[in-house]
Length: 405
Image (tube, rainbow, N blue to C red; front, side):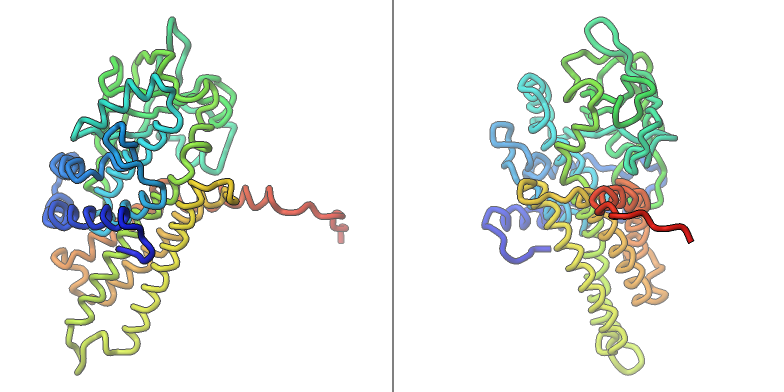
């Protein structure tokens, strides 16, 4: 959705993104979503078209073929993609944000070894490997005592990785991964893990199953396995034992990007509901002319606009942290946007009546997609606890303890 106050460059990029979605995503999204094998729901043609449109590399600087868009513009692009399909938005959002991270966190040598190759590859996607079968929300809350099961042990000139990740977006499609592994056993996720740059071609690195998801199907999520996978010292991103510093310092807009993706789903559901109520004649009038229906649509629009303002604020603040960055912005925008999206899609479903349950209206797909982000990119319950951690830290200490009785 194009918003007011855009620069000419922003408007041009968003217009190009909308054109890309209309031409290459919208005509095929439903058919891809309906395929039985989850791996087949992914489309390399869409990725290649995104490359040709300049979207895939938009966060990179001009020396690498990008245009160096800021976090606010990135969030707008991601939301625009989400109006056409959540999965496509996620596929490209992962690459856009990890590309930003490489520019900011990688050493000059790492940037020159990794960025030009994926930037020039029309199929160049990126992924980040954190979540494990029994280590998911622990790093968000944070629960500091548990270790990653994926371990990295010192070897001559580098590290040897063993372990498993799962639910990894672009896991079976990426060519480069930011992989978190425990390097100091017993020190907890936050205090004893390291971030490694792992290439898809690394010996000992294999892909497991592609997860069969209810929604967001155009994005593949998969398992990653590491069996004596050697990673050289020069592929450590950041400092050894301080992997989570990479997330804290260089991923401030990640939550806003996730929020933007699901906000796109809400925008699509609202558009479908508005179109339907304008054209559906029932009980002597069009649905939109009925006050009860118009009130529902008004509330949908209000919630979407509020969520969008929150997301845009969080994305802008991520690039201007000296202006008063609030760490709760790294948790709450996605919670709010996903809850708004869920309310909007279920309202859209109700406004369509029985037709909403039919696949050809497209609403049931939006319901399935919106459900994904109640849990994806951090379960909402976990993100609320993360925000509560900062609230407790900021709360003033009581002057006196309460008296018993």
